[in-house]
Structure formats: C-alpha cells, structure tokens
Image (cartoon, rainbow over all chains, first blue to last red; front, side, top):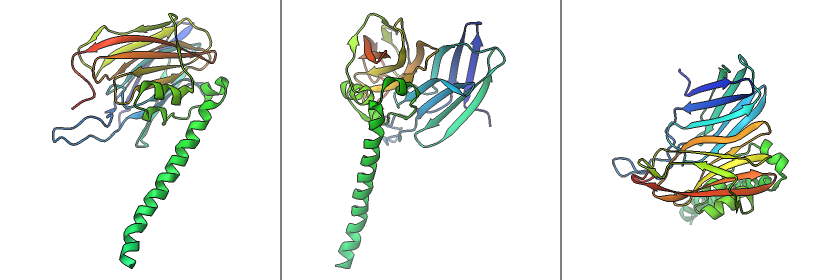
Length: 103
Length: 164
C-alpha cells in the first residue's frame, strides 16, 4: 500500500527544510454528513519527525487541522542522502510511517 | 429484585470506568508542570488541552500560564480566507530558546488546533493549514525560555470549515 505520507526534505548545507503532506480525513467530530448524522472524530494526534534517532519536530494535532494536513519546518544540520523518519498516530490508534532521503 | 440489580450493575460499571478515565486524564495533565527542558522532550499528547472549548482554558491546560503579547512573534496569514476548511497559516519568531509553537482559533468549537514542539536545533518557523468555523481571532503562542509570547490576528472567513 502506498504510504499516506509524502515528505520532501531538502538540505541547503546549513539547514534542512522539510515539507510533509499526509492523506487523512482529519474529521473533527463537529461536522454532519448528508443524512445529518455527526461524523465521528478521526484525526491525527501526533506526528513525529526523527533524524538520526532524535526527534527534530513533534506535532500535537486536534481536529482543527485541515484535511490532508500539510506542515513545513526546518532544522539545523541534516546531510544529503541521510534518512528522515516520519510517523503519525491518530485518535483511533492507526499509525503510518515512512522514511525520506534528504535531498 | 435480581432484575433490578442486573439493570443497575452496567451503570455502576460505567461510573467506575468514567472514574478510571478521569483519573488517567488527571495523571496525563501532571507532566505538563515539569520544567521546560523536559517539556521539549516530553512527547505525551496533551489530550486535556485539546478538549478545552475556550482559548484561555486550552492555554491553561497546555502551558499552565498566560502569554504576553510580543512583536517578536510573527504570523503570516491571509486577511480573508475564502474557505474556512483550509486556512494556510505560518508562524515564526526571532526569540531564542523556543521550545514550542501553538495555534489557537478563538471561535472554533475546540480552540486549540495544533501545538508543535521545537527541539533545540530546529528553526522556530512552522507552516500548516487549519480549519476555521467562522471569522475569528487566531492566536499564535511561542514558548521561549520558559515564557509565553503571543501574536493575534483576525481572519475573516467567508465559508466555515467546521459546520455541516
């Protein structure tokens, strides 16, 4: 199965810029469907980026983050060719992870 | 009599379960009082803060203190969002020793949208996309050197992103 995570990490020598796009419904639990029934909450709660075994960025999310969430950040260091690990867990306990090579 | 007791016992179990969950939530909140150095490394999900309806309660649950406005916290957001379901917002700061950056929408049913932990070596500049129920103030909170700094901006929403 294709990963739900698309991540691009680019190093400019000094810092590494990371952009991630995740496929997830991010249902807040406040929206009603066509029948007027509330769509139960289903959203990513935590998203973690690890470089060389250390977290470089941690996101705690609620249902207020947009569907198919996008996030961008940068960290100092990070070599071209090294791997960046990305993983998420949602409020139903589902998880996914991927690794991306820094470009 | 026995029928009555059968009817009541599941209710009692529910009450007990509720108490257990409440106790767990209580325990979950405690670690947020720990020193700032630990806060960055602490990856426990602040479930309690994400349950608070008002912005003030969410900030209290997340940080346990109040922010002061600062012009060193920069927010890049549209004046008008045509679609409240996807509002691109980024935040950055020139403050040193940043440990976290949080986004809150005052008028959302749950004020806290996202909270990012910034370990040492990570640039305090975050971009993301959030949902807004209606026109509202958006608050960015930066935790730096154990203190809280905030920036507020009103974003007008023409189509809400949280209603049905």
